[in-house]
Image (cartoon, rainbow, N blue to C red; front, side):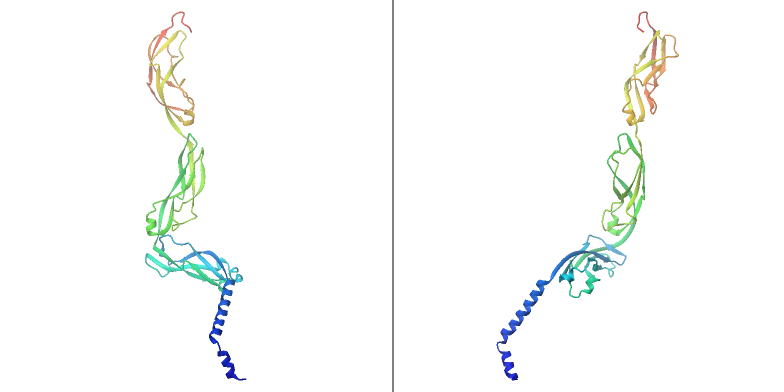
Amino acid sequence: MDYKKLLTRIAEKWPAKVLSVAVAILLFAFHRMGDLQERFFSVPLQLDMNGTLVPAASYPRNIRITLRGDANSIYHVAEEDIEAHLDLTGYGEPGLYKVPVQLNRKGTAAETETLEISLEPMEISLELDTKMSKYVPLSPDFQGFLETGYEMVSYTLEPNQVVIDGPMKLLAGIPELSTESIDQGNRSGDFTLRVRIMNPNPLVIIRGDGTAEFSAFVRELIMIKNFEDLPVGVTGLREDLEALLDPPTAALRIRGLQNDLELLTGETLLTVDCSALAEPGFYELPLTVSPGPGFEAERTDPETIRVELVRKEEGDPE
């Protein structure tokens, strides 16, 4: 074989041959790239802390992951096989830091060498503050109204205070926590509810299970009602006598359940008892209040009535 002639023929038109090879390589690469597929999902961002600092402002809670490779590679990877985290263990002072996001492969993601993984964002700006704990009181948040005529005389909330953890500056502005809305709507008796404790900020951690037991003690509402210019009746009067009252009306202040008071009329509430009187004349008699059971008369005005008894003239109707 004439190697000299062979080398001469290979060297002939070498730029065109090199270009052809390069084009072939590019075409192969483009073909391979066209065969590759992409898959997108998000994974939670984990924070590796040193225990003395915590995040003091909001930050991305999830990282967008892009998998690139052939279908067999990308769709056999479980989302749990990729972890995203920030390593904050080296930071010891409060401040604002820019920290790169680190990926941890495991399972199928670690075994597949041809898999391309990219993430967004690649770094996080994160403000850190000193971790703090404190007790805060817990208060109920009421909504709606009890049934008419009823009142909540007392309630209990267990626990009535909780421990919260979080950044020092944020916790300094939280004097108390409240429960979710407690609907009193048209209730007329005692009731007990399990209610959630409302968290004012996701950076705050409420110790415990995040709930409290609320118990309300409901009673019928006792009210006071004033009657004015009530007519005063006469009882026990002899048939041959008649009574002239001065004044003929009086005022009454009475206590009772609201719903019962609304049904109470004043026509027969006040009387004077003349059963012990047998002769005409002037008498000062105390007012008698007869409201019925469940009511309590607080006062009458006046307390006594001046009564003049006179004999009926012959022919007066009975």
